[in-house]
Amino acid sequence: MAKSKPVVSMETYGIHSTWDAESKHLPKIQTFTTDIPAEIDIEFGFTVNIKKARGEKIRYCIYHPGILDDNGDELDPFDGELHVRTNDWDFYLGDTIWAPISDKIGDWRMTLELNGKVVAEKTFNVYERNEGEFWKRRGF
Image 1: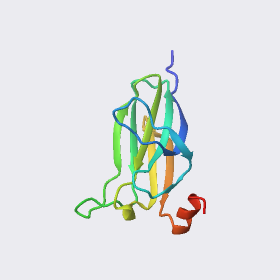
Image 2: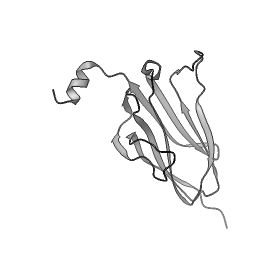
Image 3: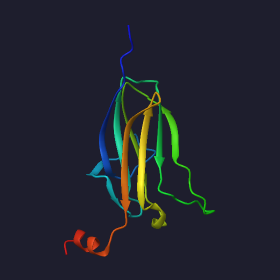
Image 4: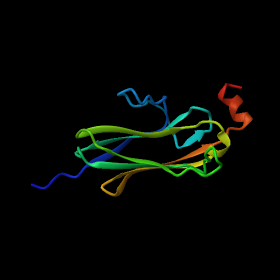
């Protein structure tokens, strides 16, 4: 009998609640968007649901827009591999903004691969707020 194909669906994308690595719960969606204001500690990314892939290996990657390390060298994309834990598994791929904000502005591309094929991908535009937008958000 042939093995059934994995099914991957993107459940959320955009701004999420703060991610806690110690918790079993994934961050909750706050706003569906690909436009992310550059604010310290804002959490953004996407969640996917993966079915029929228990034991398979996924590879994730976050391509940053030229973020520099302490030596002034550009950081490599953040990537890694994990095994799908169950036959109905939820996974969050995301990041947050930290100081200084200036090198975080731009496109952040996040990808998820399963068996060497990209199964989920989203590009987030991190932008610097202008003063008018700040006051508009507060009702003025």
